[in-house]
Amino acid sequence: MPAGFCSSWEIISNVNFEGYMIALGIRPSLRKIALKLKLKLRKVIEQNGDWWTIKTCSTFQNYTISFRVGQEFEEFTEGLDNRHVKSLVTWQGNKLVCEQIGEKKNRGWAHWIEEDKLHLELYCEGVVCKQVFKKKVNE
Image 1 (tube, rainbow, N blue to C red):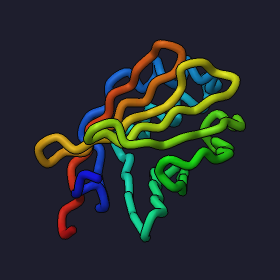
Image 2: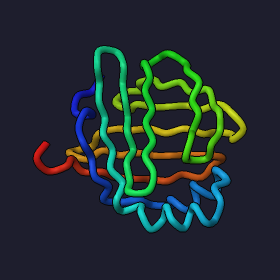
Image 3: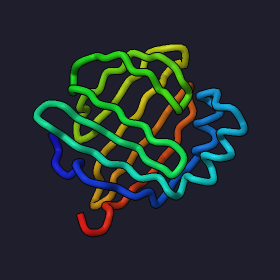
Image 4: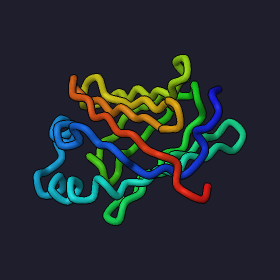
C-alpha cells in the first residue's frame, strides 16, 4: 500500500465536475449549488487497521465512505445521487480504485498520490471528472 494518503486535503483543481454530475443524473438545482461550492471541497482520509474512511466535506454536504480494501460492500450514495450500488475498492498499482455496480454503467473513482498532491478521478458512463487536492496546512 502506498503511503501518504492519510491526511486532510483541500481541493485546488476540479475539471468537468458538472459533466460528471449530469452523468449521475443530479438535478440542475443541486448541480448549481455544488458548482458554487466546488472550490471549498475538503477530503479527510483515515486508516485504522484494514478499515479505510474517506470523508468528503463542503459547507453544503458531507459524504463518508468506510471500507476494507478487497471486500465488496453495499453503498448508498446519500446526498450525492441517492443510489444503492455494490462497491469494491482495490489497489491497482499505486491507485486506490473503486468500481461501483448499479443503475449507472462504468461508475467509480480512483485516488492516487503524485508528487505531493492527491489526485481523484470520478467516472460515470464515459464522463470523467478530475480533481486535485493539496495537503491541508498544519498537517
